[in-house]
Amino acid sequence: KRLILIGPPGSGKGTQSPMIKNDNCLCHLATGDMLRAAVAAKTPLGMEAKKAMEAGALVSDEIVVGLIEENVKRPECRTGFVLDGFPRTVVQAQKLEEMLNKKGESIDKVLNFAVPDQLLVDRIVGRWVHPASGRSYHEKFAPPKVAGVDDVTGEPLVKRKDDNAETLKSRLSAFHAQTAPVIAYYKDKVVTIKADKPQAEVAAQVRKALD
Ligand code: AP5
Ligand code: ZN
Image 1 (cartoon, rainbow, N blue to C red):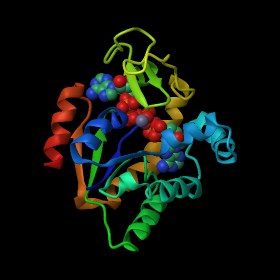
Image 2 (image 1 turned 120 degrees about the vertical axis):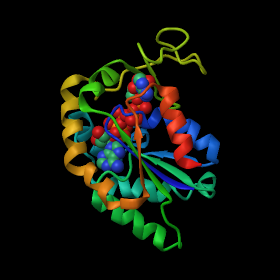
Image 3 (image 1 turned 90 degrees about the horizontal axis):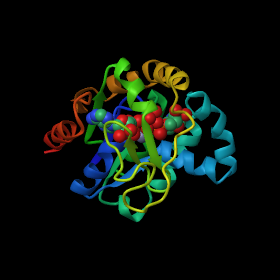
Image 4 (image 1 turned 60 degrees about the vertical axis):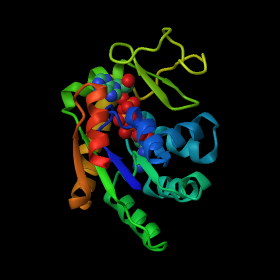
């Protein structure tokens, strides 16, 4: 399967990804995770992306398309992929289409994680992440077994720099202005998930959509 997850910041894309990936034997490609790794490693690409990310704006299409092009070649992506946070502009969607067309491939489904804006503030400000694995927790909705510590590795959890109410406003405007049109682009491939429900209910909807 070749799947895309679209949804506003905090809608649960990263949370549902491990289940989607494991159930369907796919690789998980999250441009946000790749960019944060590049920023942390202070690579030239990371240095260029850092400012936009901290401002809650989108990084250039060129950079993220390049990241996807590179990573989709990974051997574990041969059986398919779940794209989390990409494409986020119509231009990115068109580039992806070109990339797949060349190989005679296409996108099977686009899951649209719908959550009203006002619910996203709590989700974003209460999030804690384990940067190395991309796992995220929430202080109220999905707390780790031990506060501040990753369940699997025991390593410390951190806050993302863009996870504050102020930057969220810019991220939401970017979503509505630049990413919402991508949903229309995929038309009949789109399945809308009511992602404002508890995690287990969202997971059940996703499983049904991918049956
Ligand atoms: P990115 O990392 O993609 O961030 P985002 O889209 O803003 O999405 P989030 O990671 O915030 O949300 P999520 O849906 O994964 O939520 P999660 O599951 O963690 O991008 C970051 C930045 O990188 C962008 O702003 C941009 O600058 C740049 N970028 C990335 N891709 C780009 C692209 N293609 N083009 C250009 N620029 C790009 O859940 C959130 C919280 O809620 C967690 O604490 C979780 O535990 C909790 N939670 C999850 N589900 C539920 C539930 N059902 N009920 C209650 N709580 C829940
Ligand atoms: Zn995410």
